Image 1 (cartoon, rainbow, N blue to C red):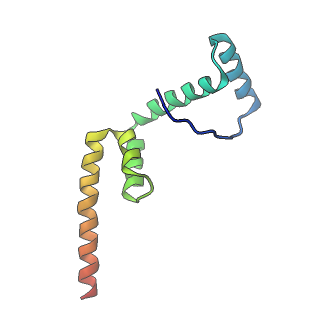
Image 2: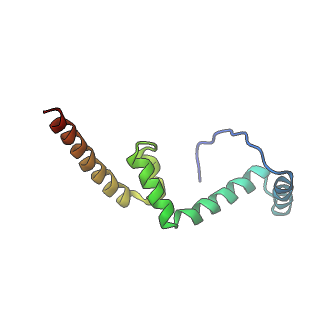
Image 3: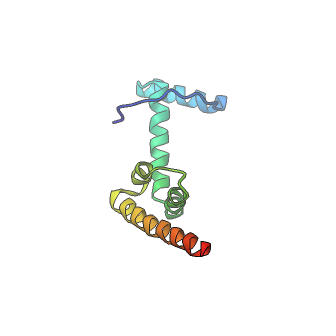
Length: 102
């Protein structure tokens, strides 16, 4: 599934952690697997939301996320289209800056 992992530290409400531990025990998985699966399911659900996708595109257009991250969320073909549009927009901004200096 994922080849690289990063250790993260975060706080969870005690009740949520207890539920994760029970789920781990019942399914014979560890706590990390339970939390990773829950996060994956959440992301799969939210990725289908059009407003979420639009917000991700805005992050890319504002140079807050990379093309690779954009591609992960909206797919390669749509990401390529957004990148092409961004390039045209950037060229237009550059031209406007040049004209403003005249």
